[in-house]
Image (cartoon, rainbow, N blue to C red):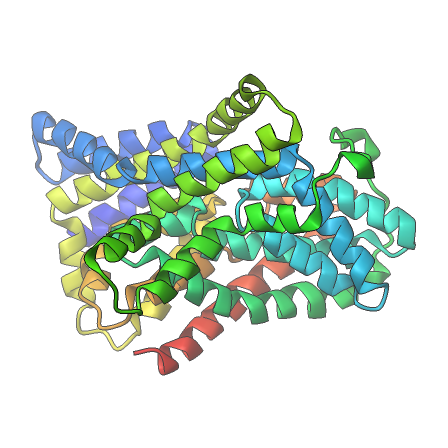
Length: 438
C-alpha cells in the first residue's frame, strides 16, 4: 500500500505541475497534505511535518544558494565572465576553440546558476561565431554541456547542494568528485558531440538578445576574473590540503571555519565585493542593489527545494520511504543505478532536474543513507539521472530552441541528445569512480 501511495503522490505532483500549470512549490505542499492524509496522519501532524521539512532542508541551503547567486551576479555584471571567455578564445586559436568554449562554460558555470550562465554566455557565443564564421552550435554545444554538468553535479548549485545535505555528503568531496566526473563528460557531450554540429547552419535569433557586451577597457583582468570565479573552489581545496597538516588548535579551528561551505561562500562574496565592486569604482549602494536582485532571482528555486523538503518529511512521517527502502533492501540493483533511474524517470515526467533529484532523495533516503557507497557518489548519480532526456516540458529545451533558432526536430537532435549524453556519461564515470574510491 505505501508503494502505491507514493506512486499516486508522484503522479499527482506531475499532473499538477505539467497539466494544471500549478506553481511547483504549491504542488509539493498540496501533494504532501494529500499523502499525509492517505497515510493516516492528522492535519496537526501533517502541518508540523511540512514546517519541519522546510526548515530542515532550507536551514543551511539559504546561505549557500543565496551567496552563490550573489557571486554569480557579480561575475556577470562586472564583465568577469566575458573576460574569461574572450581571453580563452583568444589564447586557444581556431583549432582549439571548442576546448576554450567548454572551459569557459565550466569556469563560468561553477559560480553561476544555469539560467544566469546561459544568458551571460550566449552573447559571447554569438560574438565568437560572427568573428570566426563557425557554426553557432559547433561553438554553443561545448559551452552548454559544461553549464549543464556544473548545474547537475557541482555545489553550490541548488540540486547537488540540497541532495548532498540530505545524504550528509561532504560538500568539498562532492565538488572534487564532481570535477573528476565532469571533465570526461564535458569532453564527450560537449566537444566530441559538438564536432558533429557543423551541419546545422542556424542563424542567431538577435531579437532575443538583450545583453550587450562590454568594451575591453571596461573589463577586469583575466587573473582577477578567474580568482573571484574560482574562489569557492580555491578555499575548499586549500582547507582540504591544510587539514592534512598537523597544526595547533587555533589553526585547526580556522581551517574548519573556512572549510565550512556557508563560510566559504560568504568569504567568496566578500572578496568579490571588494575585487569586482569597490576596488573598480562602484559604490557600496550599487553593489548591494545588484546582490539584492540576485537573491530575488534565486527565490523560485529555493521555494521548489522547500516544497521538496516538505514532501520528504511527510513521506518520512507516514513511513512511506521506510517501506520503499525495506522493499528494495534486498534488490541486486546498485543504489547508484537505482538513484539514477528514479531521477531520470521523474525528470522525463516533470522536466525539472531539481524536482527530479529532490523527489528521488525523498523516496530513497532511508535506503541511500544506509548504503555502503560513498554519499558523494550517490549525489552525483542522482544528479546525472536528473539531467537525462530534456524535452518539451523543460524550459531549457525552449530556451535553447529559440536562441539558436532551431526547429523542434533539430532541438531534439541537438539539445536533447546532448543532455542525455551528459546523463549517461556522468553515470558511467560515477560507476567507474566507485571502483576506485572506497
